[in-house]
Length: 147
Image (cartoon, rainbow, N blue to C red):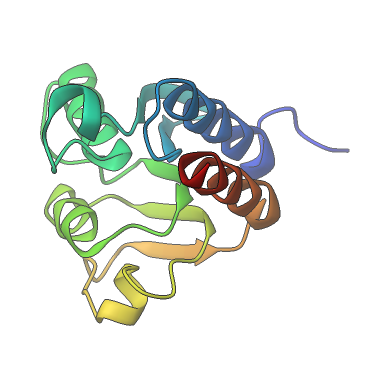
């Protein structure tokens, strides 16, 4: 039996957020934060709209989740994000003490893994879920930009 709310379900919700970013001319990265099978926060890149280099999808979602929970720690939460977090976002996730991060596409140049960024010791991280879909959206975005 497949549960309706599994990792794939939530990553698809993050991909919907990435589509919102794409539609707004932002690099298409989306994130959702989940606790007890409930989405409590959503975010997508807003760096162009807000003219703010820190307005990544993860940062938007972290702030929304903390506001929802009424506290800064996300120990019991999982973030689903369509691209491996960068060093800045991984640092914020470290301080939030998020319990788990699931990302879709790897970032071979600026991802937290290749940059050697540390996450909180209790944070679990896994990648590759719906990586093709997330990568294809990013490729479409940059191909459109080049035209």
